[in-house]
Image 1 (cartoon, one colour):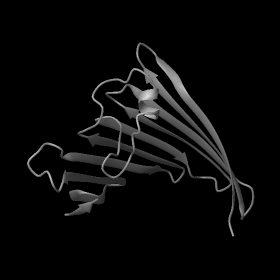
Image 2 (spheres, one colour):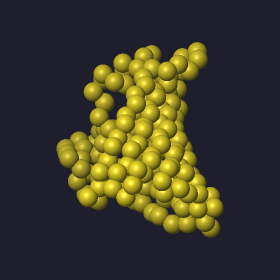
Image 3 (cartoon, one colour):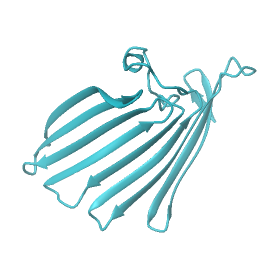
Image 4 (spheres, helix red, strand yellow):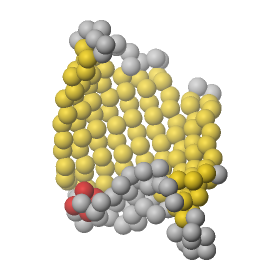
Length: 171
């Protein structure tokens, strides 16, 4: 048990393997220290599996539960972007249930690429982020990251798209 801002926090976590598959998880319970008799408690938990395929592709999948997350679809992206939602240790997700999948090429030290997706079940929202990284030499690296947020009312539609180019110098 510990303190997180104005909350009492208690958590449990583990990391291990099931055969060659990594198995990790954690859960944390937060309760306002000055409101011990009300229902303001927050609980979030995550379970993760990861695996490397023939030393070439890293795969990671996880499930996240957040008891105070959204429990219905949002009508528009503005609800996510402009409602001052702050992700933190206490609020790890926007929805009650979320799933994450990541595939990353790790076989080539010069050129690598990956794809990640995060699905928010109750919100019918999906966040996609592919990336590609190129090592120019021992000190310089260039990367391209794309981000796309999709919402589903009757059909999935793209609500937000971003591209980021990163040039990195290591010294």
